[in-house]
Image 1 (cartoon, rainbow, N blue to C red):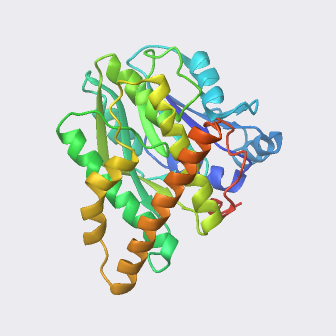
Image 2 (image 1 turned 90 degrees about the vertical axis):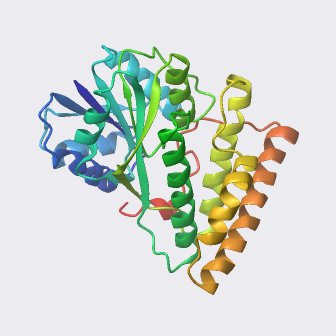
Image 3 (image 1 turned 180 degrees about the vertical axis):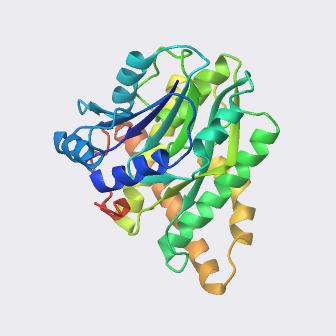
Length: 302
């Protein structure tokens, strides 16, 4: 059994596109698509669009955060490690080989979690669009290296898959794409990167939304130090400097892109300082309020 969980937040048009990107795939195995959203209006639109397709279920998110909703769903669908759970968001869509490639990877009984490659749909001709392409390319490079070496790395929250029947739940105090892979790793499962699986992402298009999203991500990762002190960190300020500086400097193709890269260095330093100030000085830690502060520029269809 395959459970495809789509977590959304009042974005029915984008969610419909995401659902269709799975329905268009040839899936021979029994599967169910579960849409989790805190807005009843979304359920009405989804049911009308898909005419009560029995492959699609709606879970009314109680509004306690994404991790809370996922834990609740995990409890309901808990089964055996032969079954697979695919996790994605309502504001993205996936390539047509997603399910088949995940299933192929999980034929290896040592694989506990696998993740696809985020691909930016933003134009490289704008600064924020260029930043998204650069950052995704850097993450792609790191994940390929760590996956080939069979070392630990964090998955992409935009799209990853796990074995069912292994985890009873996971902590709410950090991002699910970080802690879930590590919980599998602790159980001696391996993590696999599948760059041939693509998930298409609309990134923040202005400073306010970009800053909000990145600070929230940093806070989620900083909480890992409290929850799992032994966890290898693949996303941190020092790792960005160590592994990302040379890559970033060689990525630009024009003088304009080189200037934008310099701006990105300054922006990343700034948000790390802000995030650390908020967590260390103001004691404002990561809160799993699923999009309590919306980044409007990432909502491409709604």
